[in-house]
Length: 146
Image 1: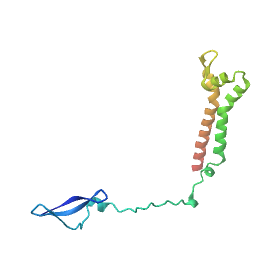
Image 2: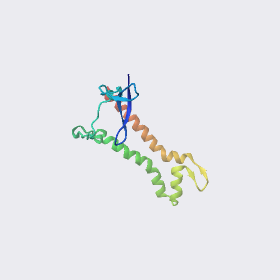
Image 3: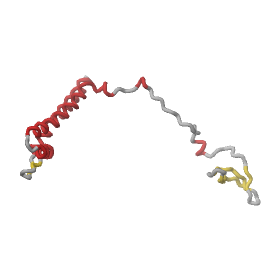
Image 4: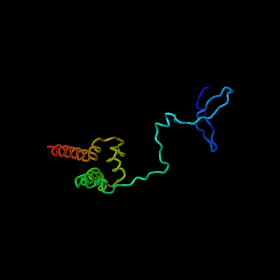
């Protein structure tokens, strides 16, 4: 007599494994499933209800207080360094759209030429400010460790 596992169709759909003994006539005799299969024994049973995560409000990080005043002033100053040269030049000119395009892209629509000096005049203060801010933060970090 041979024992083996077979799949039994269930009423609501799906199937289950059942341990059976094969008789000499070829029929199956159900025997108790005393030992579960390895895959089922290895994985623990999970609860069907969802567990709700509870926020711990006492240990919540405050990101703005760690940055301090320096980061806020730095962000405002970098925006001013980027926008001020273009805004002043556009405000003082008669052809506002052409001046804006010239300052932002470096392309002069009246002469149909590209000018690098316009790009340097627009983006130069911004890049210089960002490099100085980066150097400041690196130096500040090094001094804190000492």
